[in-house]
Length: 293
Image (tube, rainbow, N blue to C red; front, side):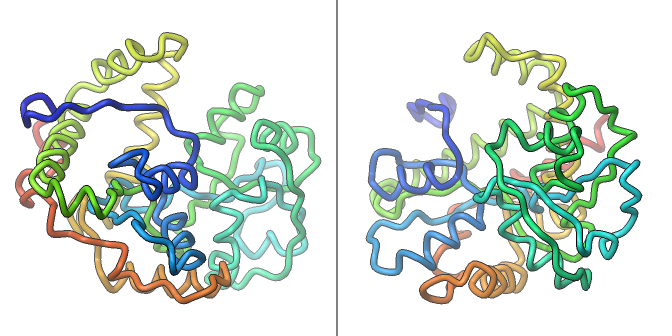
């Protein structure tokens, strides 16, 4: 950011809904938020001014998944019919479940709600048959509860017909209008940061530790590797280019979300996405870092 002559302060977030609200209120200029949450905001707040606009895709695929212990005997999506699934009521994987269920022809299931810290605990105790959530979070949480990764079955939504996007960089439309060059510089710096992160993950984690001294570097290195594998360095990202989207795919996501979430108005994908601030394809080619290794 300094090389782009930008003075950037980074604050911790508290979920996508809060990040979107903070940018919409004008308290923040830029944030990272889940595209499904942004679409839901658009669909349920049609008259709200200053709705944030997504300008760069970070997660080309949602990391949402349904997970269960292998000893449950659940081997394929249709085995989930009639089972008891658990997740917080606001969990993105739970909210997108109807899309996953329709794509895989899964019969009715029942849901148990809980606070996020109890999700994996209830799966281990057998209170629920399966859970939904971000795989890279739940797998590490299960491990901390004594469950090995090889004893967990993961059905990633992206591998079972749900082609939704994940987190994106969102910006206040007022900031876009007033400071377009700053936004372009921010995205160039962001793309460069991703490249440097991939080239030296340990250094990236140490930078985070300097800001948050209580993190476990070894654990966060593993989490980072999982995030890259599940959401960033995917086949869709290779096809579309890091940071960009396939507009037909984005429209399909908006249509599916409008139906599934039963938003007040149908979501118009064109209104919440603006690719004109993106760096060049060369500047965004994070896959070159892989070729050099």
